[in-house]
Length: 492
Image (tube, rainbow, N blue to C red):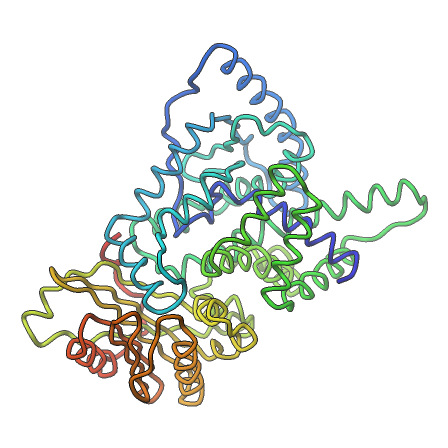
């Protein structure tokens, strides 16, 4: 990896650390409610928080103006700054998770991620997100209240500068495109699928990361020019160089990307470096979407800017991408969009099946298909096996005595569907606790699991007994598909 790319990896590490603590893209969609009480504690703490607030507000005012000039948008008003104690920050984030991860949805996702092999038990998604967000918190711009929130004690001016050049892009775009209306509120209300939310994160986080990197590299060059008078570089050349470096980083295997991140974390040192290093211990299904929203999202912004300047980026806010397929493959986003389909699970015939309660219903998208194979040790094939995705639907249900997971996927053609089916079979064959019982049948920790394909449709089903599993598989394969966005998700 070249020196320029290594430097960008360090900048990206800082960007990831700035996100930790739930920026607009934190957790499974939605905004943070900032209705916590005022600063608590003794008079000394109150005085320290007031001083920190004043210092950060003064520093970030100039940064906001710089970010606005780079982004080509007017800063319509100053961004209020508020400093919270660690207890307040943690309480706010826990409150957010309570809203975004209802008990039923959390249980449904826990069951699905373990049943299909994204993670191995024991796993608790709520605790995993709390580990990712709460214990590593740094700063956040909250689009719901239009306030820039810092955690008490984050006072290093260089650190504030780096974090703010990312978070204040969120503040700027919020002033122009209303991020709460665009993504946060629809996500909270269940009007967006996880795939749609993640696609929008590519745009929102990619925009902030691109500006953060651009500003940081320009700062590096400024220092270089001071040492070597006469050297200069125009912004167009700089943008092209940044895009090339982003393409290099995006083309790296996931494991190499993580290694680059860890190298960047080592360069950071201190608490922020530890925050990034901690990502290495978290499941791929949590880290990969986070990393791609920053890295591939920044590449999306670079590509849009090269095609039509900032006006092209702005137009995507007005007509956001509808799937991670579109932001992973730019040719499926423009000039004409490849709209995803939503498979339908056939309605149950028996009264007993109808009595099962839906815990969660979700569209996961191409990015999560990739993470499934990466988590299962098939990283070299993950992108190819996920290519050709055309839609999916995850349904997790529970009765008084048992639970079931159904995941239906649609593909561009039978060739792509067949490749995915083969990859899925091999993924199951590699899993700990999985025993093959036939060509398309496995016992996964004592639970019958079936995989089958019908044309462009592939389904995997796991339930408590063989009869129920076979009945669900039949319904999964016989169901139709719709092009419209799915209805609000149960269990939110």
